[in-house]
Image: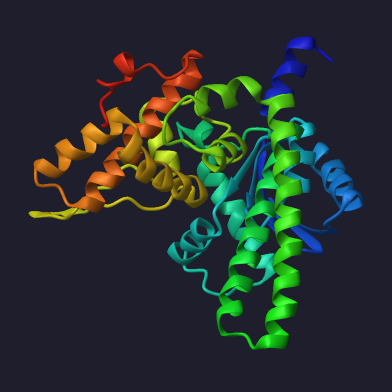
Length: 332
């Protein structure tokens, strides 16, 4: 065959987009008019990957499903296939907008395929592509999640202790002691892991007054984009960008919504500490309150300012500098 003609034939092969519905035991995939169910394990990931290698895949859309999607996402990324991991709410809203009210695994996979067709043609599709997560950061994220689970269990047991009788209280005390031991051991493992793999970033974040150990851990584990995105993008990613709510002559109040709740939660606690101990955040908060801003609005603005400062520090590789960061604008 003529090489030029062969090149044209290859370029004429139409790429397909794929939707993958994830459950604990199965993966339901859909592309073009094909449907495939495989097991959600190494064998199933390999089988799906083999099938997709036989077609020209442009984009795969997967719902975030409590971590059950992690294996197939990593397998597809290792195969060089771009994956967009989306919030289930986005997929359901898209389905409703298309008039799809029924819900089964097969239907969900087809909806995700149609959603992939939309995302694949967007000019800013790169914003939806899930970046590969390195193994060290993934392990850190797993330890962070486990620590949060242990702390939640300890809080629950402590609350039960207040109303417990003598015998029950003795049992609860044993459980609390065990949980304390597990949390302490996990904290040691986290410290070692951070020192071994994220020492520089930890040092930078730890130099900011108000940013404690839990905030540092969460930012490193759950926000790998820190230092790699613009101020506007990082603020929107976390859900701290005020969203417009206007219609016609109506000018609605701006509110924050969506984003990464775990990161937003630790930033809130960090700002509460920074208002007391960090002169930049403290003065900024006072200025907003004196201007008549409600406390909640001022706190969110401080969270936004702190995030922008941390983003710049990690991006530039420089520690906290009072003279430099005093004039950082809070608007992204």
